[in-house]
Image (cartoon, rainbow, N blue to C red; front, side, top):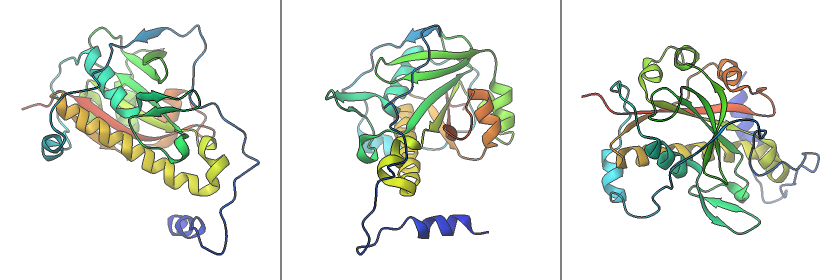
Length: 241
């Protein structure tokens, strides 16, 4: 079954047929929020100017798979999360962010599995976009479980933290129907590249991971795998050697 080929063909645009909105898709909130009883951690204010030159960062970016067993700072984690999905402009209608997204719909959600972050207990957190905060989803040492779900890739266990992106496809499908999936995966690439460059700027390393058992990662995050499902990971830490 060549489902990838079929998807590519079935989601093409042609001049003699106009793309239609999927009116049966419900309108989704622009970002996810957890109930008020979940603890919140306010992240340090991110830098919005300065840093190393872009082309220097591009030339130094490499996939890093071995990390020192040291903590990263909460400020560094906050800076990386801001680079991934941080708000750069609030128009009242849209929260424009550091990355492009088709129709400014932003169907991604960002989670953090914290292994070694100074001032942050081990656990799984959700990045709250409008407040630049972390919401605790569940506490505990989930590094071994995520490593196991990521086909045993040891860098997940060694990393100071791992970012996990999920998609809420309905956010984009109402406007773009099945073609939305193309755009969602592009969104994930935009965010992951920003994280990779931000990590280099902070003296950190990162490695992007697409090989994992989907439902095992969904179970760790408490996702149903249908309305919201994990699609991409990035390990982050202090490079070894």
